[in-house]
Length: 491
Image (tube, one colour):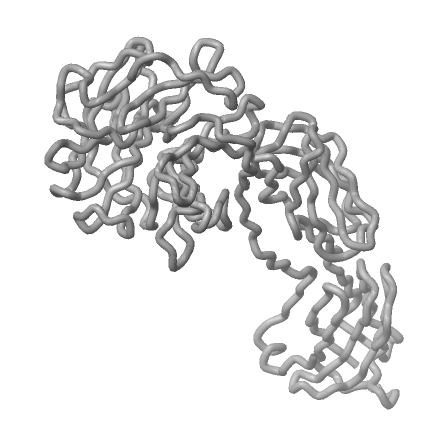
């Protein structure tokens, strides 16, 4: 490629490398269904740790009940009701539709629950409990629907890292109860659920019900049920991730976390909770089989590791072994890592260190690796594997140029020397031009191997005659090598 005289007159450009533009790879964990159901006739609402166990609150016949489990799979229902329309002190509640709770600093719990009164008004109320079993209503309405008849439900409480409470809930945006216009709202409390800020939309997507959890890196994940495009049955679980620990700004995550089909029946009331393995997530959900009106509780588990990025994401094949950081989720203790490329020998990670369930560091040696994209494979201790395609781009270093004696006096026998170093084989072009772009001489045009190649110019043109005194331009091109430099000839 010939450069114009205008470029030569106004700039001298030296490019010793190339920039790799790699599209970011987004991922999020998927859930695999477990054998079930695990609770009959129940809509799960939340799970909290209990003494040596887990306690789940679920809704049956618009009343809140509870069950306990040691492994998160086998659940035994506890006697009695936790909350119902008869809970005292009496408030105007005919049906409870959603429930969530957090522990209080002083001990005990406060719940927020969505309910409908006998007039069809939707509200979010609160109740307190000393032991998580016996609950008493609080008199004040915590959050009222935007208008009479506006749907409000699926309250989900989250304790932020600064101690504040954040509430997420579903409300209809058009002041009605239809399902097509329900979106996710949020409100903040700095006094453990007594008073709440003005509500606002946090995710403008059609949703059915929601759940929420904080990841190890303090970001917040929302899971929500939603219909397939063009359908009305909520048959899939989608997700969004927050930009920070405050849970006020969310981006949709690509793909589907879990799904059935609309013909089989709807999903509802997801509950996201850490599995007993601590690095996996389990989602509980209600499923109502087609033709039935009775929901039963099932669960699904994140089985495979989910690597999302590798940093740095490029390396030169002449680099020494160095440490890379892998970010993602579902990383077990003692994972193994490798980079792989079709037809090439795998590169195994060494000195693997699991920082936490979202971060791994490992040493990889790119020396001699084939150029191009390599995929990363993470294998958990139980042999479950996850792959990040195009995780690492193996390239080569930019070439370099050393010019000696660019003030040339050919009548004294002097020569200008060019030492050109390349780190990948390829063709090298060295051409000499006048300032107005006329080709004077081609000094090099040949295939070259990795290493340093030396070219001389004695001040002569293609015909072997000395050029006139003046300024000349030399262009040099090769693998990751591009340069424009001036030479002044003095006779």
